[in-house]
Length: 94
Image (tube, rainbow, N blue to C red; front, side, top):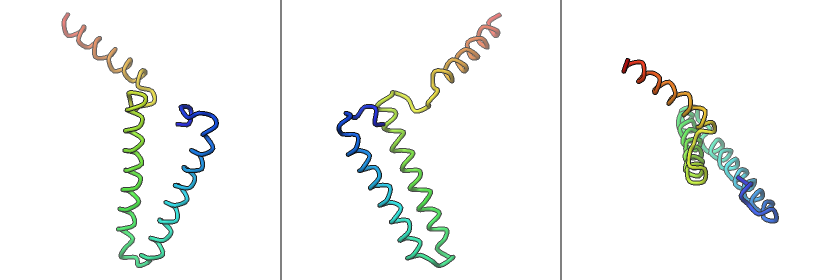
């Protein structure tokens, strides 16, 4: 992510990211303190799962917008799948 950030601004971006990480960790800790009852453990799991899902979706939107794809090895996957599909079509036409 920081490859596209100007070098003199990278410390600021790193500081904001670190602050956000610590804030979310503190919120997690507060939720565990406020909801210590074993009956609320399922709620904590759902909140954790939703926060991870929101992080994945945020990064997916960013990756799609910046790189044009989500998968890190999309060219290799495309080559494998399209090559197999084209050879299957070729075999069926014979």
